Length: 218
Ligand code: ADP
Ligand code: ADP
Ligand code: ZN
Image 1 (cartoon, rainbow, N blue to C red):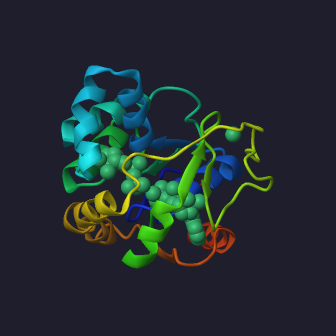
Image 2: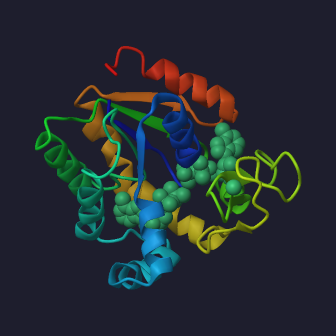
């Protein structure tokens, strides 16, 4: 089964993608993570994408489509994919349909996570992650169990994203409403959309997503 998680910045896509990966044996593909890795590695793509990301705008379609295409045949993707942060434009959604069709696959379900804009700013400004294993946390909503120690790996170094500040979040939200929200219609016409209340706590959202996957073949 191939799933798309669709929602604004801070909606909880990364958090739920990780839970789905652990619980359903799916492979998470996150263009945000791939782009940040390219920026950190200083590749040509990273140099092109870095400034755009710092402004909170979208990286050009052809660059992210290429990234996804390269990853699609790698690793243990047998059970399917969870796409987190891709597609973000209609052109990307069309490219994804083509890439999957070439492999006799398709998008089976699109989970739309709804969260109010004000709550998103609070989520984004409190977000941090383990520098070692990447596990995501939040100052208030998902602190580490032991202060300063990663629950998953015991690491003690944490990172915050450069674009996770209020000003850049506003521009990311604008990009979401203008360029990504139209995808809800695109996938609704294909009968693939299920909406979940992303304002609920992490465990409740996880249960609601599981329910929204009922009837999708494994
Ligand atoms: P996205 O990938 O959609 O940008 P994340 O999964 O990184 O979002 O979540 C953004 C922040 O909000 C993180 O710090 C995460 O721990 C926290 N978070 C995720 N889901 C919830 C939730 N349901 N309630 C409260 N905080 C949440
Ligand atoms: P968010 O927490 O906002 O959902 P992501 O980690 O998915 O953040 O993305 C961070 C940034 O990377 C975006 O603001 C954008 O600049 C870039 N990016 C990630 N995925 C895409 C994509 N599919 N298309 C264009 N730009 C992308
Ligand atoms: Zn860790």
